[in-house]
View 1 (spheres, rainbow, N blue to C red):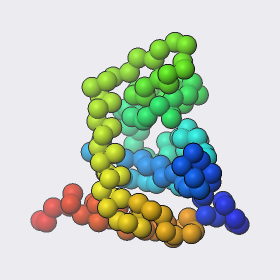
View 2: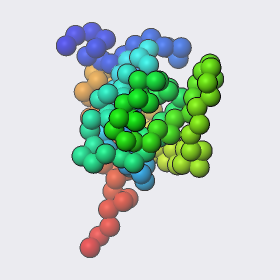
View 3: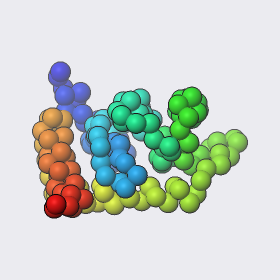
View 4: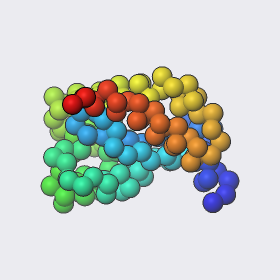
Length: 150
């Protein structure tokens, strides 16, 4: 691995950056992460993340970046309810469970907790492996609040 791939960096509107995609459970606890370059579309991370859980989820909550017909077809084939709002440029408006979509804020709050760590918020690490290592350390700290002493 060399260059930008090894670093998982890419040009986006925000500059030279990367995107951190997360698979989380119903309580917003992170299960897996995928790091892509900043220019990569969100829907590119879908294939890698959907294969990870041991048990198929009942619903897939995601933002408009994951609104693609292929993703919706794959979710229907897997018998998973897509809770993804349609993009504004869609000709046919997509209906989704708005009450269930409100639960997506748990993942946004989780990212906020992880970004308390300055190294994650500003991405000091050059290599993707170093950055993901820091993300995993922060995730372990985040998970500690869900562990109860016996």
